[in-house]
Length: 248
Image (cartoon, rainbow, N blue to C red; front, side, top):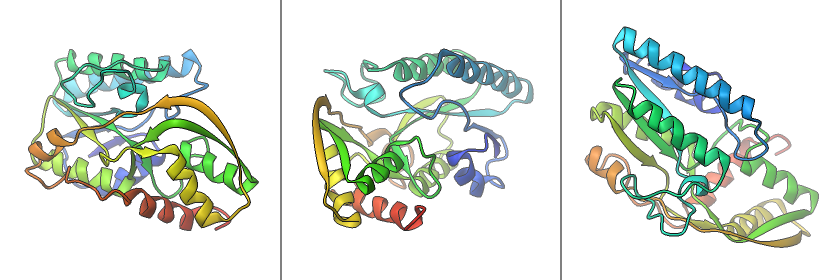
């Protein structure tokens, strides 16, 4: 696998470098959902166009990463399925959906993966969990009442990628997530339990409930990925991140 990028996801995909020699994984671009300038979106789009040209010229399969977060599935009526309607809730969601369309219409072999909130060692400081860890350690945290997040370990993402490519899943859009909608309050509760208190909570009404279907992932991999995760799966994922976090 050729991996374009050097960030969090790209580093973890490196275990597949000697596998899937026909695949180019575009693991670079915008990795935050807020406070993103238009120039960052334009750079990611330009890199995608360049990568598509290379894949067409070299007859390679493009692996493109999109989002299965509330930015894509958080709208009222979105079923969380790849073949269902989506109502992007942010510029980030609109951007990813637009790039999905570019890939689908490009004519190159491709696999588009919509990822949940991917957690793991050495995450960028601007992503959700490192921000929450810092807030809880400071003793003050803003909690979005009615919000939820689908959390998945980066190792499980890599396993799903491997399973899909080994199953020759092509020209598909596939959710890769845990399928468990974890309330924001529960995430903060677990961090407080692990990191200690006291903790001052400021509640903000910012509902963003959503579900992510794993039916297609399970079907395409014949059950090797996409199996139901336990309801408390997120706790183990968070614990693993805390063990590797600076100052742990």
